[in-house]
View 1: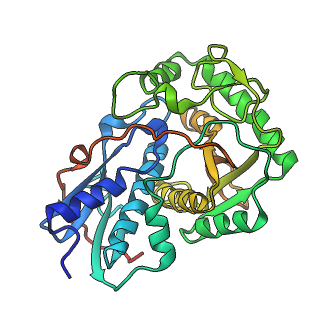
View 2 (view 1 turned 90 degrees about the vertical axis):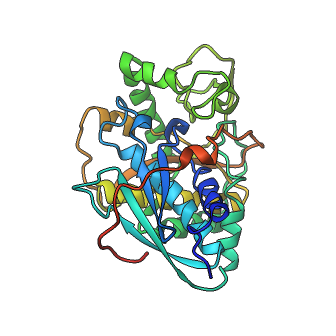
Length: 330
């Protein structure tokens, strides 16, 4: 069986799959390089890093981790087993986030194909959700999806959700006073004919609720406010550590659970303002028994929404900096 990195057509399929991943402000901060047709390297794109809100590169790594999971699915559904090396040569090649080799493995499972088929269907949904609660068995499946990638999804009860929404509102107010943060936000939310960022048609309506279960992207008061669900369902994705490898695992877990949610017809959006503020202020993240929070996720049943713009696959092709040295199979 030929390697999925060996032909232009096969590699284009991998580029397309990876490029559909969610990313912070839809920056799509990744590139993918094929090395001698034998393996692939996932590279960070430093020109797409958010210098103000993501000084540690945490959000960039989470975004690239999501792209890596899509790449794994594409490799697996092509009949191969992906073998992953995370951060194979950090000291000499800091932009090299992962290397992927393959071995023949036979047909993919039904669930793997189901997740792969949802890559192009998944959307971030910032519209009001319905009042229908997410059933316990669906939440259990999402928690299982996160655990498969070595992370934990903690679903919050009503009082904890209310407390977190208040915390998000406080963080949002503080970020609203930061001119550099707001300028960076505007740079990635400007309308126009572009292949990245968040144009108005994917940002959703303004929110009349306080505290709001959706981001306003610096446009508070500029859009007509509508009512959102009365009891938002929030969850947090946590990791045991808080370094680059943990962030990459968080991204893979995030995409696995988002695709699993899509299988169940569940919508999702994100409320990561407190995490942005934590990163910007270099504030320590106190260790909690449930881990370090990497994503704050809103779950529910929303209407159909359009897809955010995407860069063409040809733009995602990178130049390999070096070969990986050692690692372990995933």
